Image (cartoon, rainbow, N blue to C red; front, top):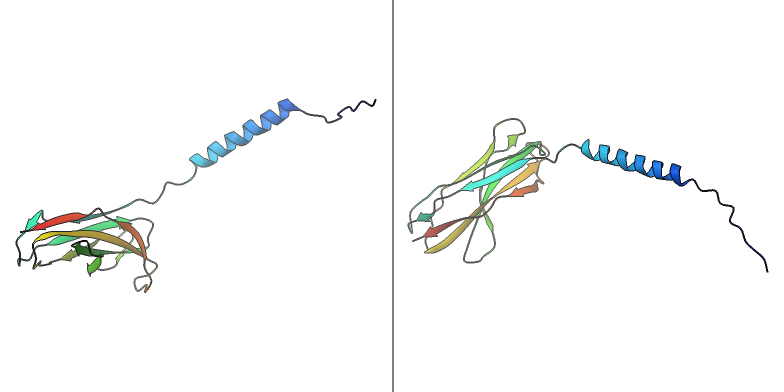
Length: 143
């Protein structure tokens, strides 16, 4: 019968210290990461509107992650897909807040929903903007 002896040398104290040090460095690195980009998009609309009368819907927003930003207003009614009503001018980061204004008129009774969408652009004439944020939905009851 043969007897096998392990000859591995372990240093549990040093290994534990190395793991603890690595975890400490990871915690410090996580606190040094910059905060996420901040931004908002809001839409404002009246609660009710009369059939055939014009009303105003406004949207504004900003986002510090985008060099250039454009706000667009979208509308839907009757469970249909969203379609774009209007877009505001391109706003540069650090400048004025991006905004859009629409003056819709509904010919039918019922709820009409509006939302604002913020698009990030790489330049003032970017032909392929990326959607950054979407606002909550504002519902107008047309009576």
